[in-house]
Image 1 (cartoon, one colour):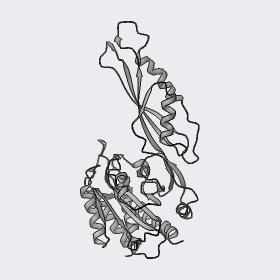
Image 2 (tube, rainbow, N blue to C red):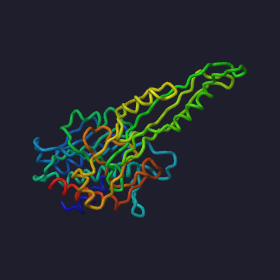
Image 3 (cartoon, helix red, strand yellow):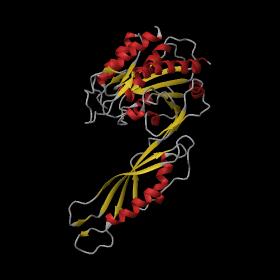
Image 4 (cartoon, rainbow, N blue to C red):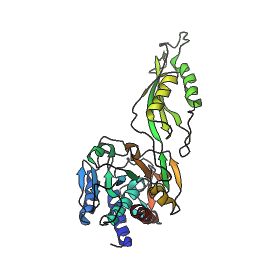
Length: 355
């Protein structure tokens, strides 16, 4: 099939996906739409929960494996939408609809690219295409839950909106629950150990704290207090104040190292929720990155989290669309971004898979 015809069918698939509600854990119908694509192109596939994956025709266990992955679940539309989020329509070159940009454009472009290479018999890597579920909520049936059922993966492209530039590193995430304690009392009585007043010093500590190691691609570790909760009524000083701390981790630290540092140094009780969302990176001289750079694509470090956090191999985040549109009202992607995305994916892989 000519690339132009493939691109037209790809846009049709994206429209179909937009029209189907696919909130995290509710992706069964979009999984069926992706299965229909593979069936139409006579590509064998496997479905695991709402994850759908396929191998290239001439799979060879002796070869290393390239993973192409993006997700087909979406967040729920916010209240600021002025358009029907499930009505795909094109205006002024923009395809509107929930999930069009995050990450429908990347997903269908990767599926098209996989389809383009499916019958090739002279590739130096196997290609594994995974359309995954539950990315937005990091669910147990997401890519992370699927990995034990997949072949060994050596390198990956994770499709997210990057304007088709190469995110060669991605920050990890650790969320902490903190408790600042004090002495509970009646508001009318003297209390030199007011938990809320004690919190002032703790908040200042979190605001001013800096981690020593700075990443060339991702910069500093960013720590932000994002939630605070205390008290039940106006005349009672609470025994404690609860805080939530969001820490975006660069590739110079593991999440465990961050947890160890903060648990030791923070001036309050602190407990991490999970250590599994680690930062990820790929060497700038990796052949896959060099292939993209040869086509004029820029490299950068991404502050946002994706399914890269589930992977232990080197990976790059790359896809059509703009991350700033993700989770926004009246989400859209330009049609020419999808056209460019498919074209660039194919050109990058032609260099990488046949060199």
